[in-house]
Image (cartoon, rainbow, N blue to C red; front, side, top):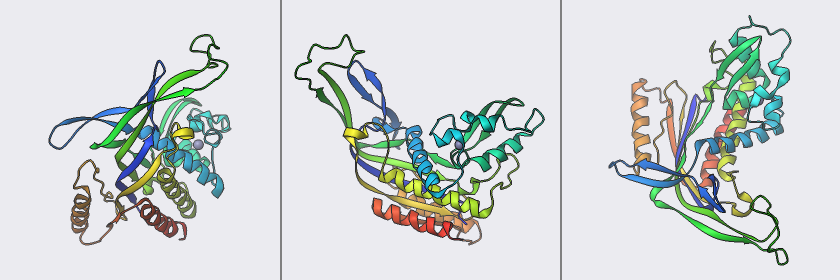
Length: 319
Ligand SMILES: [Zn+2]
């Protein structure tokens, strides 16, 4: 059984506006971040936040869970960001009182919902007494960040054309008349780091015991892997209605671990990331007295990424 999977790669996207910071007047601002390269030089580059990319993965996980008939709480069933905290039946479950252990509530959570299990939640609110119970995410995704000198953003002029209503609407709050606006479009090579801690799926954070049986865990892991494919095939961020991103390429290295050693990941912000992962993998295998629990494989395209992930999904899903 796989313990963890890491994906380090370069995603090439053209003309997207998947993640924005807001608007100033009629100009939409895209998300820009500062990074420091290996020589200590600062670069300001376009990026898609990890929050946005996690949201994309979870949206696909919701669809996969529904189609596989896996359990979902009432919050996640309607894609409520509050997840199980928005599920009144869970928060007011008969029999739970101030003496109920946090680990018992966590166990109830794992049984109730795949998304809270895989994507995590901080349960806050009153269950017998005020509680704050953390369920850590099994999915970890970083900023999807432009490689310096290989990413660009421009702002483009658009108009909503209203032939007979050019003076209609009172102020900016009424979007009735003809108006003009500026929207960014970014293109480039983006570094991706994603980690799937599969050993955590169905495992209670407090007791460290599995509260979901092996078959249930395999179904959940398979759904999570399918969501991890879809998140790059169809990145469901902002402005897709008119700026559906051109997904040109996704290449990199997928590493797996069947031991407690981590599947190695190195950001593609480092040009030598592929050979670094290979060397780390060799070293980790030597450390664990030749168990060869770490494996890695390059993928040269989005199709190869999908094929490799689907192969693991089939292996996990068919015990
Ligand atoms: Zn849920």
